[in-house]
Amino acid sequence: MTIETYSNRHAANTAEQQISLESERIAVVEDGVLKRAIRLADVREVRLFIGMAGRDSQIICRISGHDGTRIAFGSRRWKSVGEWDNHADVFRVFNAALHARLEERADSVAFIEGQPFWSGILLPAIGLGLAALGAAFAVYFLRDGNPLALAGLPGMAIGFYLAWILRPRSPKPYDPATYAKSG
Image 1 (cartoon, one colour):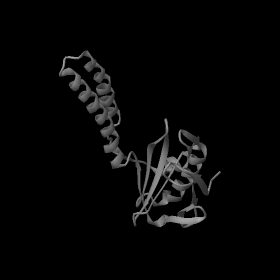
Image 2 (cartoon, helix red, strand yellow):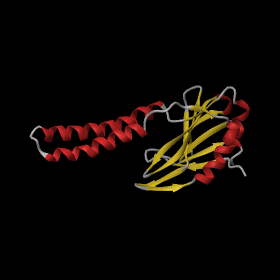
Image 3 (cartoon, helix red, strand yellow):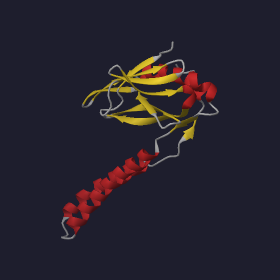
Image 4 (cartoon, one colour):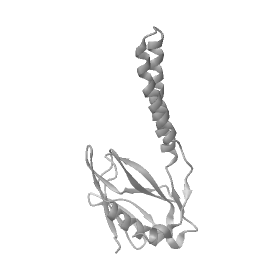
């Protein structure tokens, strides 16, 4: 079974979009209007990475064209604050169809698993910020010898732990045939 159109809203700040896998291109339609399209021959990169979806996570597929156009869709659909629908089964089928179409171009398309550079910097910075707040709290109360300073230690520990587990890892190439067969 293959799916040629996938409906998605992978983040709260994106509109509902219909992603269509056509014979020559992948296109995004929002409210009945074509917003962006990338010819399959012009795809430069396909990146799969883990993204946040409220308290859960989702797989996000981001396709980049040679002209800088980007199309992204995820395995969950945002409904409202704190509410996400899991569309992993449909996502997997659509993602497999996309990879099957691009499989013959594996030598000219970069297939990458891993976070984009910006999230590799931003996410650990959040953890370090939390650790800095905990340290500032502890130092502020330590000046007066107040035992409340110990309350800053969990913030420091959690912040450093978050920075460690969210540290940047190098992206890795993958074989598109792996995903082309998974649908």
